[in-house]
Image (cartoon, rainbow, N blue to C red; front, top):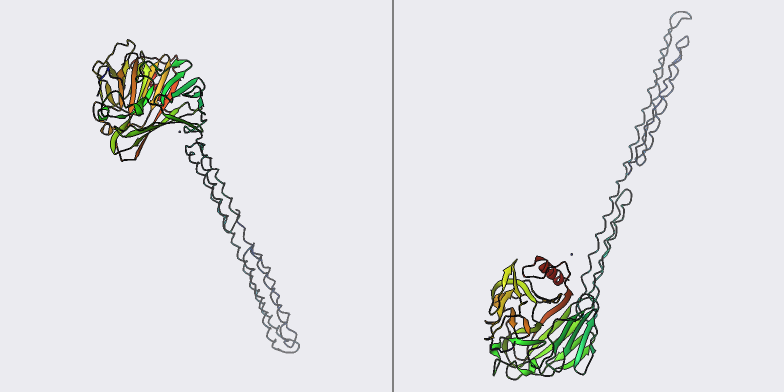
Length: 453
């Protein structure tokens, strides 16, 4: 901020059928004169053996008992005699009991269906995103016991995880190029993102189809582009403005590493920090990821602070957290959002004051020239913010630009310690069906859709 400006997703097997036993009983012969003994009765036919059950034991049978011998006839007078008593008919042999029906083998239970393989976890973000682990196949069902073999369980098919590739956490990493002596670029589609190594390693350009969303170099070496500072400004020494040159506008050492553009600054001895900036872009998702690091040369307490200068005349909006102080701006609130319409470009801040707010949901947006510039970050509670007059989200009106700012948590950093912090940028064309105006529900919906991509 400039100090015009002095601001603070089965079957059963049936048993054997019992056979019927035919029993034949024979009577004894007539006794001969003189009383011959009765003829021995014919023995009963042995019972037919029971048919064997399919699985059961064969039926047992007992032979029929022989008929008892008839008693001799008693003589009576000449030639006359009583007939001998007929021999007793032999009792029929006991019918063999039917064979016990064989018990059918127990039907085998169907094998349990294999559980579906677990979905592979998303691949970890990295320079060459790793694929997720494939799901484990379901266990094959055990065969049923006794009867028919149980059907084998179906093997579960594990879905392979979708690994995130590319330097920016998914998709295709964009390889940086050097376009001039001190200028480096990440270009994809209609987006051009440039960094000036000679002036604070700061972002000097962000455009979509020719619409610039960052104010470029000017005669003033301080108030242009996008920079990274420590907050609060009141802790800067020996003066609170301008920012320490080592972190703001001195030359940074550039290096291209794969799909990353690294900028390393020198140490500022007064506040005891040096900054590192890591820029990367993903052509598939459209996100530009900036990983900042505060390297402490002595024990300090500070919040990371990104300041991007955008052209005046657009519309700032963001979800409101616990509070907002408008400062020199005229704002409106609706639908849980804070709106600042800068169409008139009349807001000024002679005393360096600014809007300071606690945001929510971790994003803020600026609509300008038919383009939406979206910043996404980790939301911080009001209790974690740097001392007043700082806020998680700040807006300051400059002469030809607005400072579109975001700050991280106010944190203690040990000597030689580091504090990393990430902010993501995205630019997108605003559809003609979306109304660009304060309070527009369609604009908020569009911004939320972009933030979720």
